[in-house]
Image 1 (cartoon, rainbow, N blue to C red):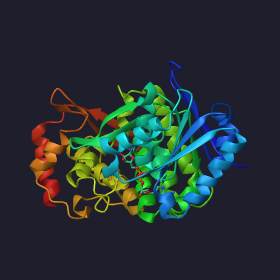
Image 2: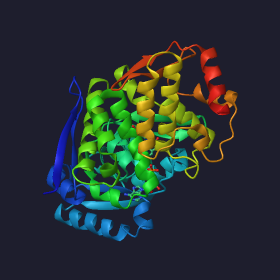
Image 3: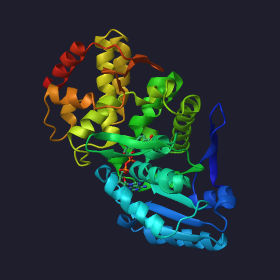
Image 4: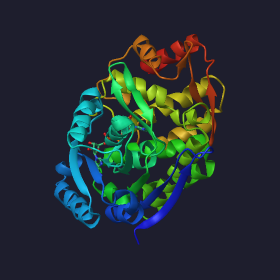
Length: 379
Ligand SMILES: NC(=O)c1ccc[n+]([C@@H]2O[C@H](COP(=O)([O-])OP(=O)(O)OC[C@H]3O[C@@H](n4cnc5c(N)ncnc54)[C@H](O)[C@@H]3O)[C@@H](O)[C@H]2O)c1
């Protein structure tokens, strides 16, 4: 059995509909579920550099080549440098040149296989090459399995900030092979849990209790815990995205902790040695809890319960946990306001109410924020 779980993601006006398969053998998942759209086509497999680093590339390439023979398809391979600092215009241009020089057709298929950096870059390239070519995501980090591959946001970073150039582009499907998590470095695995626990904070108290009760088994990737939490996370994200694909309203709650996180990532110049995205989100959520207490939007006890779940997953909660960050409250404030969520000079913040419920606020007084930033950097 290769499919362990399957869920469907579609929006109300039916402009997109696709499935997320959670299983154990991505090639079989691909062949069994996408035969029709792959058959006889040109397939561009854009893969994460970890395959080479872990000497898994030969095997992966061979499996795709065998599949392409069974499908009478033609397959091309391209390796991505998967650090966030390479999710940029230059790498996008190199990738597009590769795809175009290998004469892509409108009915070709692009497959991303890798973490969130690979998925975001490949999703963006798919959405703009020939004004849109079908793509399938095979996410290989926990973070990309539970978050970045789901929902159709694609994009790249610029010197002005993270993910500031991109598109909404829904894939044909998402294949989650949990075996990929076995090679994932512990730090990357833990960072993925930041987005998992985020879903419980913003949407689902029962899920919060499940995560709290089973933390150790989840971190050890034990069955059925790991499958259950991936499924639940994708289900929550799919539900929210189905209601609001283009982030006009409720989808904004998925950004809980992210305005802080993006500012931190920008301040350390996306240097993965110092901070990775999930860690930034963990610290960002801790900041959001503290600000919510200051603004009397939630009780201190409720916020502390959430912060202790972040720590239980061995994730950081303080700015001083970021290696080598040099910060003034002005710098932090300026970066904060670079965020996409600034409208008419007002910043939209996702703040905490109680476990399973958050608020979208755009009337937080700048003076309160400045004072809060001062406290944050001086602690
Ligand atoms: N599009 C969205 O909605 C969305 C949501 C959240 C995050 N993101 C983006 O996702 C990116 C972060 O993604 P990420 O956390 O997956 O990081 P990543 O893509 O940088 O991958 C992390 C590291 O793990 C390696 N790796 C990947 N899979 C592996 C495996 N199975 N075994 C061993 N090593 C493996 C990669 O080579 C890389 O070194 C950021 O750019 C962030 O902005 C996008």
